[in-house]
Image 1 (cartoon, helix red, strand yellow):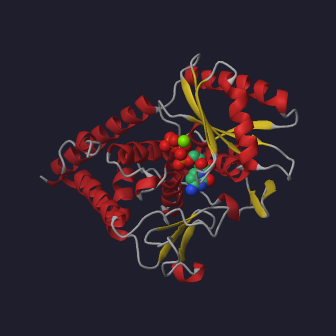
Image 2 (cartoon, protein in one colour):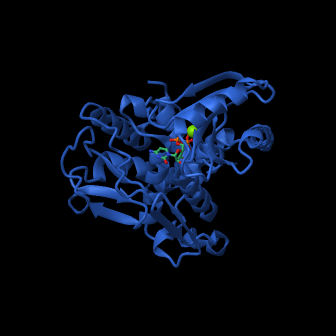
Length: 335
Ligand code: CTP
Ligand code: MG
């Protein structure tokens, strides 16, 4: 009877796995969407270079870190070397230039936390946010992209977690929940912590890539093609990883003392970072260290109400994966 039960269990896991892979594949951005994004970038580059011949445009965020799901907007960074520029002036000028072309809904938001120009391209149908000189975001985008090349399970897990977070309304930084960027870092860290590890810690390895941005040295091993097969000693299928991820954040994470750190590939203490109390609006109720801006806690947007919401959602997800006969449907039910 035990053998029969084990075989049933095996079949359940196989079935769940197939469902998760199907969901992942339905979310992946098709090639032709990527071509459209490149096309829009080329148009923008031409316009920008008329005014600032030395300036460069970079894609960052989910359109460039390989964690982009269908229907995401694209994030663009305008990099101007000149240190003396006035960001808001450039922003308004940029909006002006774009307005006079065929682009729609051009809108400058100079007072936002990250000042941007928003626009929509009627040719490709793509919406886009352009920021200025946010080079750290371009560098952390590359770090995420490099991690994604090492083991496909990172993208699978992150797509499912992002999809869950969007469905459940816990992916809204302005409402006190976490950014997509924070969720991807949580996934990377989680896979660094599996035994055997599924991902290495690139920032602890001999650097092959190094840039200094805003006085922050960003260095890590980026020859990721050499790390193919790194995680192959760990054979955990995606269904098990999704279950373990939610179980960790529901029941095992030490919210009182622990900081999740992709930079070190380990858990470090709040004490060590001096993140033990509220400073201004930063409460540090769930701590996720930015891999380069190490003074930056991506959990700082979470307040005492939303930490409760977030933890209840983690518990809900963990319980569904444990007990629900049809977890792939229930998990993503709109809240
Ligand atoms: N970013 C950052 N610091 C933050 C939030 C975001 O540096 N606190 C940068 C990162 O480079 C990130 C990008 O801004 O990749 C976009 O952030 P976000 O919208 O959270 O992630 P996306 O990957 O674009 O996800 P989505 O598909 O939800 O748009
Ligand atoms: Mg984005």
